[in-house]
Length: 354
Image (cartoon, helix red, strand yellow):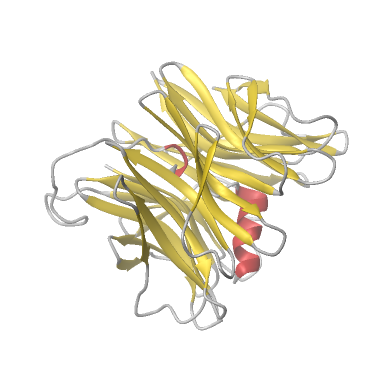
């Protein structure tokens, strides 16, 4: 269901979902997730209760909690858990528009410049008790990238009077970092912003940076570019681009996580028949691609977010159940865990493990 993935990107960017806001930390080996002494996995996304409308939600373990929303077309794009409080970013459909917002617990807060224009909060981070969200809003015929500190909006520069979007946010050393793309009138240029200063990652091809992470003062971003015939999954260390294996028939990198010098990236690649969910592990020795499978996966699948802790890699995403509906899930290592939903489409955009 590639169309479902790109709808998620359009409305929920995503892709995107650094686990879209939840900061990992190195830790000793832990018991398995869901065990009595193991970590708790939190995921965020949306589900359809009737095959038509969408409701924003998060899952704690495999148990779903609905978020306050109109129930028409809403989605959660990012998640962060601090001191037991769950923070999610996203959008809600109100008065004919897609409204950027965030939730603390299940309580919704709409973001300024949202009530009269379409937009989305694509990612969330919490630092020093302050909520930061990144996204975009529509104004004067194109999307404007921005981030919000609490509910105070800061516009980000683009490449002229063309659409641009911020799709991921990360706070490091008190500085706000965001990643996304800016259209130059011909194609989308992948980029990131330090504060409000934009850095282009590849100005000669169409692409996007879906996720950002900062470790040891170095900026890491993940996304894709198009080489003229197919999408190529890649990551950037600063502005140095590195392609990921599995790009023969197309691939995208959706989320990046850096722990103790090891880079973890979630995404998907095509095998000429289906889209295969996967994650890549990058070390000084090389890059390994880990395919994510499961008993229910008989069609397309997508890993949209990643979180590494306690020696285990967790990825969130969804898969096409024999062409009938999209099933939300997370993987602990390569073990699939389906999440509570309905018989209609549901997706996971972000993951956090505590």
